[in-house]
Image (cartoon, rainbow, N blue to C red; front, side, top):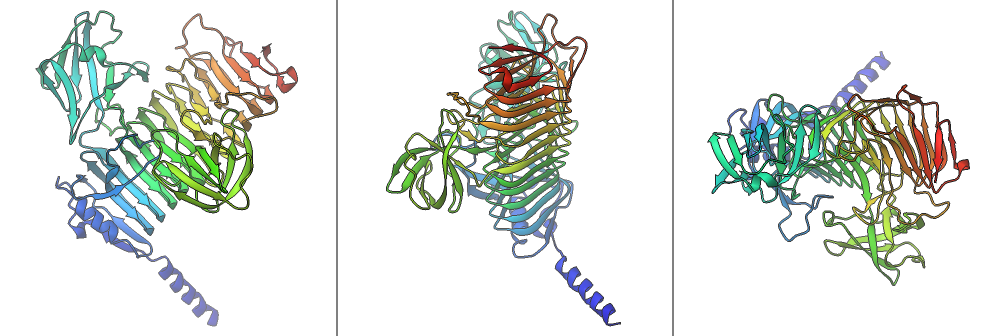
Length: 599
């Protein structure tokens, strides 16, 4: 009997420990399908979750509209999305979770419709936050879409999507939205036959005379004799200026997004910055069903900058992005001065600055920007942001003598393990996944369908984007790469560190295994690799697409300055006779059962 009462007591304590506080948005004046501005009520409901362990914020379902007026506002400096100018960096945020802990946003399949330029959600300095069962879209996406109806040498008839507001003044068309107007016309063409996105231009339309023949029907009169456009082609047009993002996770830990649908994101996509343990499960970035739209994301879909712990993307889907579906990287900062035991380092790319990239206690590597090889390491005693573009760092002990201006610094502490599985990436004009992290990477059971460029790019650079760093353990297995590379001329997996000096024995990347995948080639590229120690390509099946132009050469594996390469036991179809091209290598560096062309 005594044990029975002990068990009841434990069950009671356990139940209390897992009790939840349910907060209903309707109690704060939020009404579904009212088309009223719910900004104030939503933020008051979010704030009511603070201090309540296990709080669940429930939305009512239906449609909720949010305008910038009355929404939360914060100054945010966002990696890869902070333009180099003096304009305000204050963002309007629909759902702001700041200094929150142990809270769930239960969307109940609510459709959140944003007006103007807004961040869908921001999670700042918080832990154990979950967002689930919610949809986000824009009343007027910052992407305009124009469908070609007919083409003649002197005119093109078009239909403009009903969500793409436009005006015609003296024969010139312009696109506008809620509080904005397109100034530049960055254009990507969607080919509905090939289901591909390709770089294009809107200049011929701007140089012609626009005539509205009916609402959302515009005829462009001009010289189109050299146009390659066809009926059904869709021109997707945006101003390339990045001043926002779809969602923002910063300085937070244990964050989960589950069954979240992002139907449009302005600026960069969901950006996770210096956060730990991020899980995306069944997150969809795609236009709303039956919307008739092609584009869902102004730029990237999932972007991870300077994170640590585990980044996990599982059972996700992206379709219709104007840039990479996923990018994982750190940031190289360049040493400007080294004096009196301290170094001053600087953000070098104009779209990334304004936030702390190092913290006291972090481990750092000093890297030669030409070779991308580490020269030495240190641990930071202090780290402070002295202005929007520079930090002052002090190392424990004495500053190494080699720490001089011109080197770059990589943060070794803030590098994540990455898992990407069971997902599909399609309808992008650029790459599929960009991955640069020194911790374990697993890419498995995914489909890369007609990505415009390389389906997977492993880079590392200290001269262009300044995105670090070297990989040490990558496994790419059981994926399907179908007809990728419309824009790059190569659908290969591309391992391409931007090391401008090759030195014997210096290998930027290590231990990359590509095993058991299916490659359906649209062009010749199968695998490109530079400066890799330990490259395995085995058990893969390679076939040629029916879209492959006749007269093309056979698929190639291009190697430069690699060693310990193993390329064996791959299955090629009867029409495919691959060749391995090796540059700046010796035969002893390669074990292969294919023909080798040494250079």
